Image (cartoon, rainbow, N blue to C red):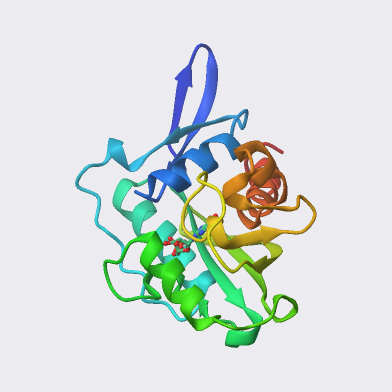
Length: 209
Ligand code: IMP
């Protein structure tokens, strides 16, 4: 069984957020606000292993991250894996979005590589989408939910909020890149926002009914 704790007379289940990416932690923290769980970050488990993201799909990586951290901590764990799929690049960088420009590169290295690949490609052919798979591993079982968001890769970075490819991901509905949007707006339409809304429903059905 998932471990439970009592906080101010309320029994809360513990859920470990299986990521050390602070940008994701900020977004996911907001997206899970008000859910009746005690959310723990990996700061509570400094010796937890760094999970190698070597799966061929976002789903495989999300499940692997959640499962390994759940097995290490003995608690339920949640992880997301996200990819940017650009149509004219046949879905690249996709599952390799984090290391598009190579191993141990910065966000801007990846953005610059993407802009180089798309140099000269007209606006109407720059369609892309973020896909985010969220996995919950609990009691030896994994379940996943998914969210997506359509956009266009702009020709140069715009905006200073967000992270990763946000400065070049233009959302037509808002007329802005993710990096020009407030986090609350990004969370309303983003791949991660949609996936974690579904995740909340999953947890509420699985744990609280
Ligand atoms: P991960 O494998 O889920 O950690 O994501 C791979 C890469 O996708 C990250 O290193 C970021 O560059 C990018 N990424 C993930 N989520 C977002 C997002 O919400 N906005 C922009 N880029 C993102």
